[in-house]
Length: 284
Image 1 (cartoon, one colour):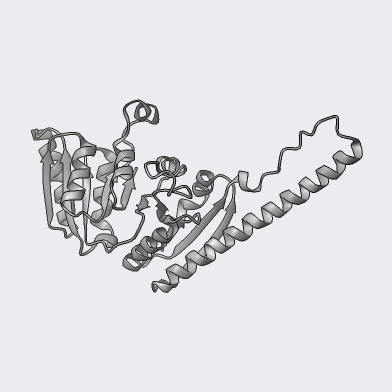
Image 2 (tube, rainbow, N blue to C red):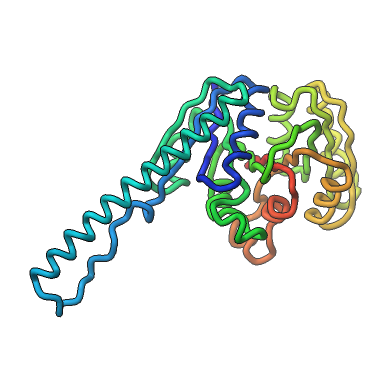
């Protein structure tokens, strides 16, 4: 059975990642692999460009001390990583999920995920990383890189877990949002949850047709769907709907435009992750 990959970094969001991963696993029956990636900076050697004015003997001694410090730092980073993984595994098992594995890797997190995600069904990651308390308006440095590059759905955990009873699909008729609709219709994850379908834009015959087609797919999957077309700016309308209607989970296509364009005009995906206090499930 395809596994869930839960990414933990020891931040305040790690517990939420574990809680959401456990919720997903219990609904789908998927095993969980908890992943912690040590960045190259955490185990990199210290600079060794020493001044030429240092005597040869003193320079050799200093190099030996720096080498010992590098080795100690690498060992401490690995020890911390294993402790993070052990704590995460204990938290997930305490929730009743027993099929849990841990993996500690060294390298770039995006490259690591690209190597191991082939047999994964979904990634679970926190909205922010270790600097969460100091950068409340900023997303984790790796989140956007992972969401843009991964071939799997990315579940972005909110700061704290709360029971999920309903979800909203932010639908724009594009390929990624149709992929989201198809996944929802087939997946055990959403069974028994209340479904809402929202298209933000002009109420035209074309948009009505797209919304109707999406609704038909969901109905074929057993959902009773409330569907609406609402004019306005997508980020503002979606955020308002999530807040006013008590939505527990936002499902949407990720990054419909190029990275260069989003840097110029912004990205609805990034704004939704940043502003909504609920978890967000992204499809590319």
